Image (cartoon, rainbow, N blue to C red; front, side, top):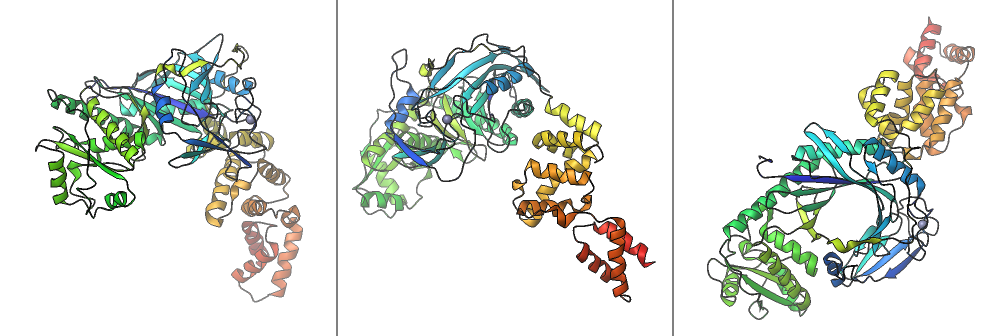
Length: 604
Ligand SMILES: [Zn+2]
């Protein structure tokens, strides 16, 4: 694919959660899975923005008339999260971390920062808006395919976590609401799918170099913006894996090119007026499961002709994703139906050829016409067909601007129309902020740290990477304190040994605290325990059974005394048997290696 020729424009937006306290209250940023202490119910209403218009995205969510349920905790959420109390002052540590990033990428920081409210009506925010503050503009990222400019660096609050969703209610949890997020958006300077991944990696590396960021799965989220010449800007939300980013971009390019091709082919065609026909009587004897169920529950089966669409509904836009899928995506979101049936996939799903012919006749379909069928409650079916008709009409104009959700296989699903400009207005409960860059110190870059660990401490590349990303604070503290102990041994002990405990012994090694490791190395330093038995010590620590008495190393004389005694008592026993007995008696007090060496010596 010649991306230059098709005019690919691509930008990326990255959100990184910060550690510590929430952005506008003192609650910790702890994410929880245990049962909530309380729940509250709310309904949200769309209101006109400053220009008097109701935002399309806001309106659409309201149409669904859902109720929102919020789950909270007495000790880690407060009145700010439930929107019962105004926000407190902006978290200064979160601001400092954001300023560190600004300094790293040489973005120019605003002299005065105004916190804004951004309308969000999906219920993921109790207030109906998200607070966001533009901290800086400009700066750039260097990639192997050229520079990518940074457009904005913002500090904003994370939304609630969704727990479940049904037809009339959405359940959210408040633990994630208000966690500080750094948002970095690039200009649409990215020219290829690979460069998009590289840019995301680079920005991720900068972010992980900051001491104040949260680490682990789900703490960083990527959104990708894609358009081609004559296409439209599509925002793809929630790219999970970095290595899937090129596929996401490629497939979105393909979807837009296919849609443009269809537009070209449909030139001169005019879509008939919106008209639907009821098919309940016509299909009363159907064996198709979904249709039968609809008839039994007094629902409606409605059909709509789409003139000239025969063959188009089944056209693939992405692998396994057809124009019919595109229509269905709209109907699902706008009407809440399970999906649609279209003529290019029938007969199928229990709908037989004879029925297809009857439907075509009823809808007055000519050979070149297609049709769409929906079965559900009357209200939903009408909404669904309207949504399909609207999407079909858009084909003649080009590509509608949309927000889409990334699927695991690289395809995408319609989420909502691109939000309008009415979404932002000032948050007057938070005073203006004057960022002070003069005191901000640059952190060591992750890349530099990895290199330093390899060069100064002799770690392998893999080990250096792992430690730098996950435990660098503890590692450096231990290396500094215990100069007698090899840094590589320290690195292995705090990274590989817990993994081994988890995999081989199926124990929860995440229960090991930094204090456990500090204690372990203190005993090693004092030679109270031997380095060959750190695994046993850590296992006991996980189990909460550790006592130093069990492990205290014996002096060589004492060791010799025990071994000699065993040899004396078992004069004819072979080495292996003696070794077994020694190990049993000396378990934890000396390593196998030492016992074996001393045993051999004493047997001679
Ligand atoms: Zn709070």
